Image (tube, rainbow, N blue to C red; front, side):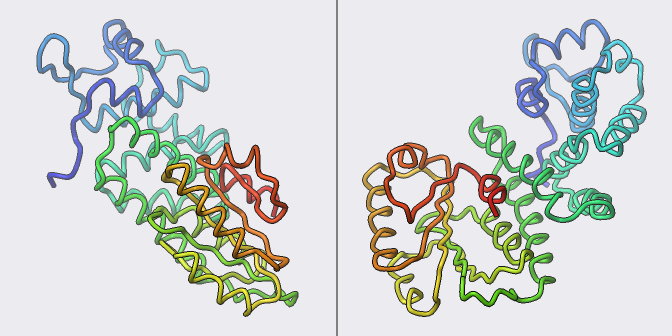
Amino acid sequence: MNNIQNAFTIQDLEILTGIKAHTIRIWERRYDLLNPARLNRNIRLYELPDLQKILNVSLLYKHDYKISKLSKLSDKELAEEAKAIALDGVSNNYQINSLIVSMFTLDEALFQEVYLQQIKKSTFEEIFIHTYLPLLNHIGVLWQTEALRPAHEHFISNLIYQKIILHTASIKAGSSTNGHMHILFLPNGEMHEIGLLFLNYYLKRKGEKTIYLGRSVPIENLFYLNSQFKKITWVSSFLIDKPLDEKEKWISDIGELLLDTKNNCLVIGRIWKEFSERSSSSQISFFESFGDIISIN
């Protein structure tokens, strides 16, 4: 139970909701919106119900609800209004907010409840792109601001990982007969594979043949596969930045892997922006995000 975060500062609320701390303080004074515990004159501590409430208020406020009206609603009424917006298809923010609460409370049942609601009317692809991907991007921001504990990130990431594996396992083997194989791998030291796993699912669902090699694959292990398939599209992704000399070495190694072949390589990650602007290789393509890959396939 010690891993469950149940106390938040006003700065935490600002990061999680996008509502400025100054604005939250005004809403507290003017509308009695929240009643945090006070450690001293300057430090307020908020509990999980406060987080849920301000997430709902944030969603409704961004959809032109007046704060004067919202302040008069009960917590239950706020939740119902937020659900109504989500059900109208205006936004997936309610589901994302619920998953944020699931993450901080380590509540797997809540995660599953949100998933079951969504899968009734959306494809898994839609759920991932419009709910899980924005959530993961938001988690990335929380990491940068040190507002998130590793236990929380691992908890929610593993639940999403399980859903990808579940849906991938339900797809029949690729029917493509053109000898084209997509081989997906993460480079040495890279452990964040959810995006690449989803791309593997996406390609399989389209009928493409794929081989998923997973994490930390040394490039020298890939040369053997060149002789096994007529045409290969190599796909790799990066989240963790690397020194310039390591990037140059990796690109050089990929160049050797592609040498004297008609194969190509898709490299995903914002860390390659500089390389993408000066790359002259017709066999290596750079993309900032998985969304860019999906839009062209």
